[in-house]
Length: 140
Image (cartoon, rainbow, N blue to C red; front, side, top):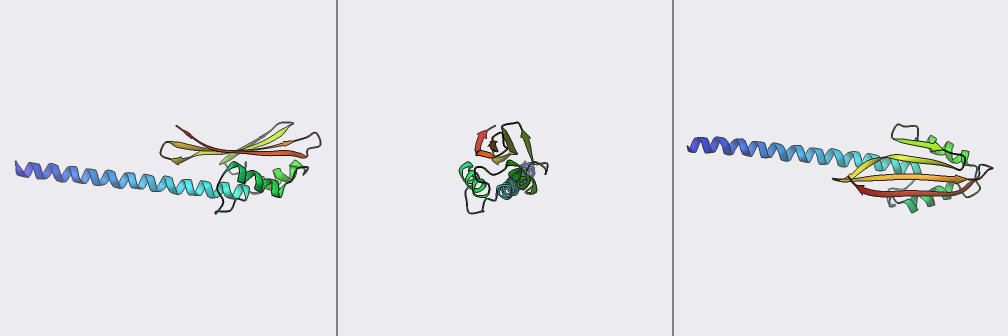
């Protein structure tokens, strides 16, 4: 009876240890992917690593580079050069009033996703009227 108990205890201990290692590996990989995604987003919009990744910071960075009245094609060219909309991790679409960029949503916690979207509005002369950025988390 005692040997059977030792056998089950050893099996249960090994199973528990394996589960702990697998969970730690999953958390570590997810955290690494989150950091890589955030680094890519910071690169897209020229956000320094010490600045928070918020809509207001993205807007101010873009408006510092592309003030109101700048031709929208300069913004489009620069963002495409940064990889936004052309790297397979983001997309872009345009109407006759705005151009919008969206980073594919990514996990920022166990049951939370992060959404990043930037929209540049322009007039009939293709000059930037405003730039708006949205960064928010939502639950799955």
